[in-house]
Length: 127
Image (cartoon, rainbow, N blue to C red; front, side, top):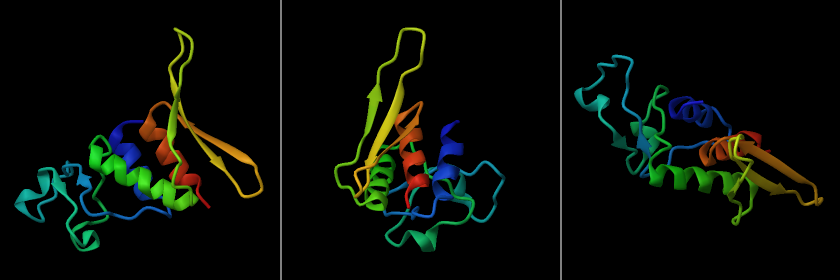
């Protein structure tokens, strides 16, 4: 999955919300709603006013990635939750895993081929 696809997947999650400081990907669909829409921009103080249903977060941006991590921690009610890199053999790709512990002690492992992919999977799987 590329970053735009992961961004769309994140926005579709029920725990997604735009947060101040998130970077949006430039529009590539020929949107002519205003001249500056094709340049990267940050979500404003009240992001819901300045975002549309075609906006996609730029998950390569450190601030936006930090906001995604915050949303995942908030959704799972775990302030210490992180994505951990699991090293594989020389011929296999490394994977990233998010470990989620439930009150009952059950552990879920959500994974992806990148930190971003694992966090988006965790956001999508949150109850």
